[in-house]
Length: 490
Image 1 (spheres, rainbow, N blue to C red):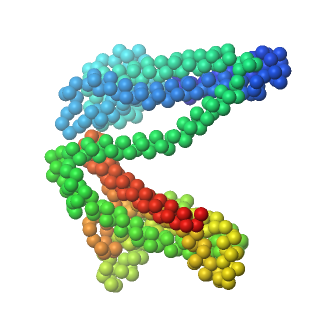
Image 2 (cartoon, one colour):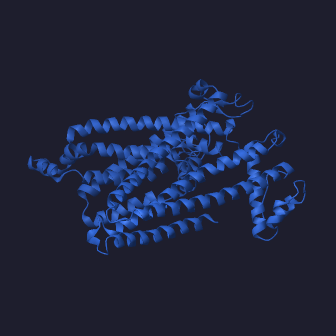
Image 3 (cartoon, rainbow, N blue to C red):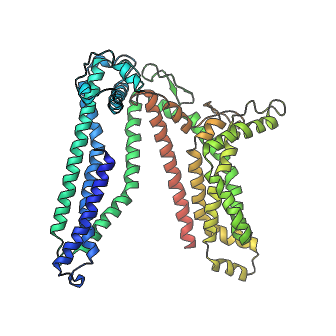
């Protein structure tokens, strides 16, 4: 049964349970809702909740656990001879999944019957041709072992899906029966429903925390695996980035310092553009502009935040880069030899960050109590003096947060860097030279079919972990600044 149908059936059963639970509660009270402990809707909601929540939990756990179980069973079937030199179990499993999907497609299109798939000879050399007829592209030859594994993969997934459907429906029906039996006039349905909703709200609130923990552990474990292959001291203190990954990564120069320098250099230039322009525009919109000007200018500034970063990257590559070359190129002052440079990416990224600083700072400045402005004016201060000495200090914690958000956005940007800054990893103070960042190298290392257990992929996790720690340190420092000044003005 398709998963969508299963969900719809569970929801239909829950709706039926709602009606039955409400009707039973009213019947137990002699048809008078005043004799019930809770409103009739609570009794129906209790039955519906018992129908949906346990089944949803089982489905979630099942969907997460089944792929690991199936992959482990299928990998155990594959002999060591299948994993040839230069390939990996991950790539072989990709072929197994493609063959299994091809067999499913062949059944759907009528090219093969289910009985033919089950009785398929594992030595049949026409399997590749059959799968090619239904549009399945394979990365390697389909041998008997791969075909046998694909058949088992299909069978295990089909069996798992059927068992999941049966278990989910049984749990749904059991939950309905249990809640229905408790739908009597004395049952405290409202308390039960509210406790259940509270648990669901707590679960929803914990999703962000659990996601962060999962990201940290995923980065940490893969980073540890990388440092088993490559010295950590060479990675953190090396000044050359020249990956070759021969000899399990030991022959590569993987110094992260050039990438860190490029990341911070481009981010600093972007902030030098975005912070003054964004802050000054926020001051103007909140303190000087009239309602009509503000109603037009603020939405226009915020449009910049909705432009895709790939468009900014193309703008840097096709417009800003050539413009800078015409001003600072070899034919003029001789500082810039190509359109891809730190300055190109920094300027365009700064334009992209203007609405982050402007909109947040504007809202923060507007949140400063009017009484503080009135008190300053009452003491004889001018508007500019009030802004400098009263409003901006009071809004400083929020402004620091806005700048931090812009800095985090700049550090994590990829497309503008790839198209505007180039791909050279170097340590240089010249802003008109091409450089690259950590995020750009993470993309380049994970592009292609590299196995995630190889040094080529593991180094991307080490780069990600480094960037995560640095960003975390920046957040902690900004939080310290915010709390220090907030104590002064609260």
